[in-house]
Structures are given as C-alpha cells and as structure tokens.
Length: 234
Ligand code: ADP
Ligand code: ADP
Image (cartoon, rainbow, N blue to C red; front, top):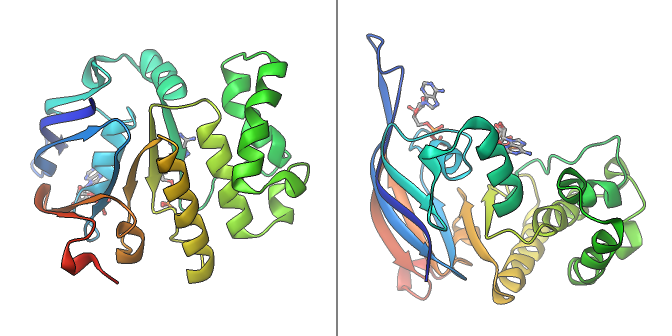
C-alpha cells in the first residue's frame, strides 16, 4: 500500500528573479507502508529541498507530493504544522534535543503539544525505553549523555506519536562509526516493527541498511539500488 507518492515534483527558488534556481527538476517515486528507503546524493543535489517538501516545511512549485492521500502542497501553514505533528517523526544529524528539558520531557514533547493524557504518555514511553535502551538515562539531561545516547532519545521522541513516516536527515553524520552502527541497527529494528523510514544520507554504510536507495543529482533521481545488489555490499 502506497504511503508517499511524488509525481513530477519540481521546486524553483526565486522564480521571479533574474537568477532562479531549480533545486528539484522532476522527482517521481513512491514509498510503500513499511518500506525503508534511503536518498543519497552530493551536496547541492536537492536532498534538503526534497526532505523539506515531504516534511511540509516547503511546497513544490510543480507536481504533487501526496502522503496518505493528503496533497502536501494544498496545506495551509497551520494545517501543515498540525499535519507534521500528527503524521511525521523527525531525526536530525545534531539530535536537536532541548537542553533545558530532561530526556523524558524531550521525548514527551510531541505528545504534550498534542495535549495527550499523561497516563497515555507514560504508557507509550515504556516500550520505547526498553527498545532504545534509554531507561537508565531518561531522567538526565541531554548535556549529560553521549551523542549516541542523545540520538536514541531523539529516536524515542520521533516515534512516540506513532508517525506514519519517520524522516531522518543524516542521522549518523555526527557519530563515530561504532555508534553509527548501533543507531543503524536500531533503525533496522524500528523498521522491522513496521515503521516506514525515509533517510537522507551521505554514508554508503547507512544507505546499505535501507531496502532501497534512490540516488539524486541535479534535482533528478538518476539511479535506484535494492539491498542485496552487488554494489551495495560493504
Ligand atoms: P542538498 O541538500 O543535496 O545539499 P539542497 O536541496 O540544499 O541540496 O540544494 C539544492 C540546490 O538548491 C542548490 O543549488 C542550492 O543552492 C539551492 N537552494 C536550496 N535552498 C535554496 C533557497 N532557499 N534559495 C535559493 N536556492 C536554494
Ligand atoms: P544540519 O544538518 O544543518 O546540521 P539538522 O539536521 O539538525 O541540521 O536540521 C536540519 C533542518 O531541519 C534544519 O535546517 C531546521 O530548519 C529543520 N528543523 C530543525 N528542527 C526541526 C523540527 N523540530 N521540525 C521540523 N524541522 C526542523
């Protein structure tokens, strides 16, 4: 079943200036529910623009991006913010935890914003703490734990509202290789539990965990590899 569908998505910046930049020229692909897809490409290829469109932070200037039957280009700013909260989970390179909140309150934040019953919040946290091995650090603060631990807390925050789609932007970019491998194993586990994942990465090691990798260059997808293809083997 299709979760995300991009049809000839185009994004031009500064269309009315003398120097318009077309960051995305013609992007079409679909992601099925339960899939794990990576997007790779060099700097300037259009990855951030693509991710921002799927994240409802930017709108296409041509074509359509549809998530769960919702045309993302048709959302008003307020609707987009609510849509993001209810349907998407985000993981970033630099974790983006709030230093003023305990790890527990960081994880709860999406549910607090959605005015969720505190009993439900505690109930949701329980299995995540176990799966992500953060029970021992949950009442400490982000500044008191390692990068790998911060990313595990960030994964819990991204998953606690049970999003349709988990969007990860260079999730291992700030971690050493051992810690990266640990985080990628957790992503595998999260995906095996049914979570759909879309990850942007520079790292071939990271992309090799995805079931499918799309290569983007100059605003177009020019290649697609499936896990198990010879060239993806480490
Ligand atoms: P990547 O994430 O792969 O590095 P980006 O999506 O950030 O690529 O950028 C793709 C192209 O679009 C680049 O040429 C970049 O300079 C341009 N671009 C990105 N954002 C803007 C913007 N807000 N205004 C003008 N040009 C932009
Ligand atoms: P970078 O890769 O540039 O170091 P991050 O990966 O931490 O930055 O964040 C990527 C982008 O996501 C940022 O430019 C920011 O605008 C956006 N962003 C940060 N926090 C959120 C959030 N909670 N929800 C949506 N977008 C966010």
